[in-house]
Length: 235
Image (tube, rainbow, N blue to C red; front, side):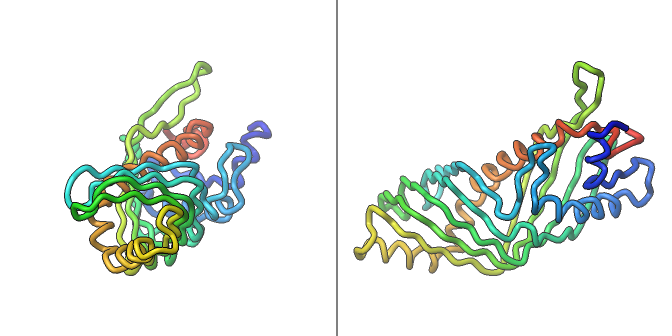
């Protein structure tokens, strides 16, 4: 192996397709990655996941009582490094991986811009937001495919990705620069917290689609730099 692969060996625990305990191996690999993901992996341009930063994420819900387009930017999430793998189901012949993940707490803050209608009332809000989610259970299903570069080296590319989540408690707070300091701004804060479960239920399809898109891009940036033989030697 050359020096590039020597460095990669630090944070990759390879698994074998023929391993009868493959799911346990994949779980061990993800747990082994945790300290490296906290620091970030410069070799393959993977930034730290704690804090995890998103420049921009757009969610749009065009049905139901919450018809809004929400743009979040300069988003910072803390707490992702405390993840624990709860379950793994891997089918490496077809490059599909299902993961169950638990997170004790996620703190998110950033900027937001919302336009739309909530319960038939027009909404225009813009400013800073904070959100806390406790006891988060997340699920992800990754559909990959094998690709080959010009040198004949094989990689896995994520073709599709789906995510889902639920949590025990949540808390929201906004600082609306349009309505801040008046009764509308305070009413919106109270409304968000008192109706968080219903709001999340309505926005969840849009949220999970947007989050999956972001993570697909993030993961592909790493996987397309890691030859398949490196982490799946008998592929």
